[in-house]
Every structure is written in C-alpha cells, then in structure tokens.
Image 1 (cartoon, rainbow, N blue to C red):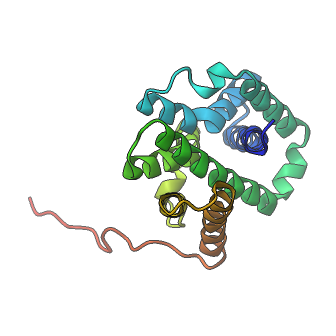
Image 2: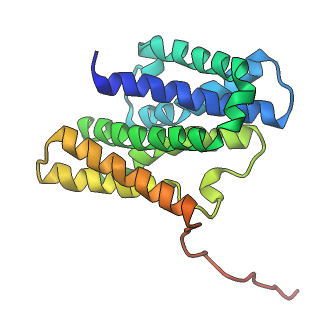
Length: 209
C-alpha cells in the first residue's frame, strides 16, 4: 500500500471529522445528517474534480475504503466530540495538511488525464476546498473561501509550484513535499498574522434612482 494512498484515506477521515463537527455545531441533527455532511466534506471536492475531468468511476465509488473512512471519521467525532472541540489548533493543522495533500493529488490526477497546467492547478484547488465549501453551504455558513484569510489561494500557489517543478523534472517525492509544504506554510502564516488578499472594492457603490 502506497504512503500517498494511506495519507489520502487519513485525509478523508480528518475531513469527515471536520464535517461532522460543523454539522453538530449548527443544530442537533441525527446520525444520517451528520454522516451526510461528513461525506460531502470528505469527498465533495474530489468527486467534483472527477466529474469535471470525466474520470469514472469516481474514487469513492471505485474504492469502498473511502466510505469506511468517512464512517470512521463520523464515529470518532461523536466519541471524542468534547476533546476535539478543545483541540482547535490541532484540527486546523489536520485541515491544513489535508488541503495540501489533496491539492497535489488533484493536480497530479488532472495532469495524468491530459489536462493542461492551468486546468490542473484549478482541479487541484477544487479537490482541496470544494468539499468544505459544500459543507458550509449546507450548514448555512459563509464558505471559507469568502473569508478574508488566505485559503484557496494557498492551494493555487502550491499547485503552481508543483507544476513548475514537474516541468523541470524534479523528483516526484521531493516535488510533493516542497509543494505541499508551501501550502502549509502559507496557511499558517496567513492565520498567524491575519494575512489576506486585497479587497475587490473598499467601498460600496451608492446608486441614485
């Protein structure tokens, strides 16, 4: 079993935990509701990527272990709910490692299916962030990509670095490590120092009837 595959499964567990915690925070849903949100969070981005790229069967359809990983994450969120809420910084790190991993994996898959570098970078970002976007929409939260902190942009930066190093034939494992590390570093610095991109407009436009 490849190390990358193990990380993908673990990332799925962590995202499922994130989704389950987010679902329970909004209300008191039943097990089906929580598991559904966990499922969307964990595989929503990868599923959207595969659909857009025409890659079938979708990963979790082809490999049932990902479904078991989601169920495991949901159960762990229930058992250790109180403890996990006290470990917000730890969960932030897990989420950051997850988006770094899924960004590079998504970029690689898009390239292997013949996508151009621009499309591959976008597909890598989709893999990492769209599950969280769908989770936030379903739980009636403002999607994290609309927050001022840098999130999706970090994924695009990591995907771009991966593509650049890939172009120069840098060893895949070294490339994976460097590109993923860039995403992690950007996210940590963005949260630590409250960094954000410039606003689209600084003031609203008043219209006169």
